[in-house]
Image (tube, rainbow, N blue to C red; front, side, top):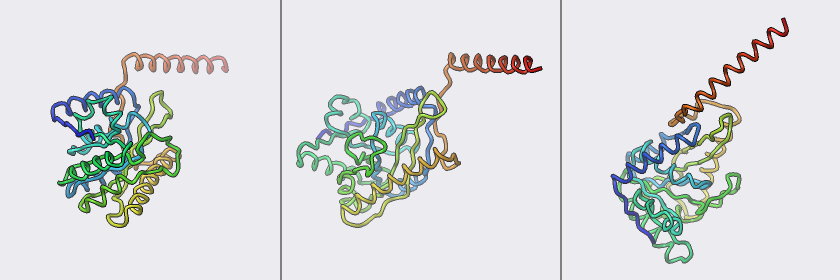
Length: 251
């Protein structure tokens, strides 16, 4: 098990760099239900469970935890990836090695110990590995449910993550937080409840893509690059000129 080596100064710097990169990459980040996470953090430790579809997901952790809610956050990360990218330990990642049951148990115990105060957040990608966005069922592992069972005071908040290409060259990032999952029951019941809650969030994103509404709000928008802005103005000018020519030919 690889412990986190979180430092405030490095976390602040790395979060700023991650946000800059996200602004360059995504047309916008759109969020629904953030109030569920904010409310939970005010009175309890929080287990945030989500799907896992992209290498961008760890940077989403930083955006949510350090920019949107300002929590003391940690995240479970595959040990092999953490060894390859050790700087993530300095922003709160701790490694889980699922090759042996005993090693995985150490990580679950570590996550349990972290959830000792209100405002503390442990993020678990409950699928364990990156999976296709259209996979159903999501195939959540038992780890998050085990941790929730061990820490009755913790609130489990589900989060659905989806990356979408639409009308812009850049993709959009959608985040749908749901109300807290059931606070009791057997481990398997908890696992199923978490999986169903994240699937419901993905369904809400699907509905938003089919029929835009006001449920999602933009929390981050790409800064237009100078060359892109010039190109857009040039295209707009050419389109206006073309329309004038068409009207002239018709007259």
